Image (cartoon, rainbow, N blue to C red; front, side, top):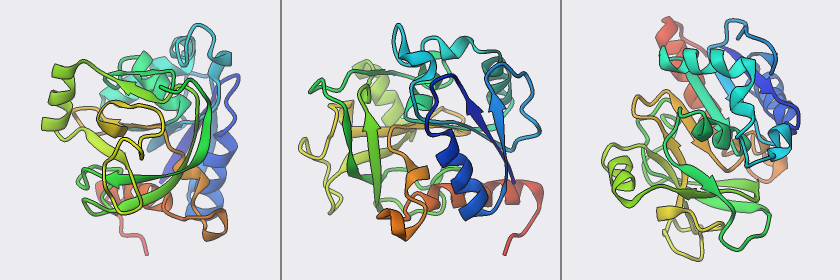
Length: 237
């Protein structure tokens, strides 16, 4: 598997994603500069966390105009795998690859802490190494992670299985207290209807080894690797 990690001016989690893929997952990875128009043969493109273009106007609003995004959109619409983490999730909603929008946290403060996520759909490319109802311990670090969509569109997301993760407590209960930012229906991650694009606010790339406090993020990366291997007719040991 080959992974491309996009670097925008202001990205600050690109090296985390690169390290997770190269040193822990032990797969090939390349940085993709925002002014480039070449995805370098990537099987998976990651839009990392940070503050692309300083989050001027609003988070992700300027990054969607980067030259690399034309190729990312084309790649995604042809079935390519794309994952947006935190700021990357915001960029994906701004460019229309994912539904909804990310607003300021309900409490209007930046939140940086471990949270728990419940896996809502274990049949996606990004969650197949999990089981429905599994609880993952993954950190957040955002000021604009409050997921919003119109009520009727939220029902469409629910009914079509596009909600990948919800904020929950350690026992898997979906409660207001477990929601760190006010997201509608405790939504922490969604996919597009086709299932090849994922956006999530928590940072799986920061928890890929036990020494980091959790290795639950590896289950998302391992899910993608298994999907790419299956699509290529390869079997990885």
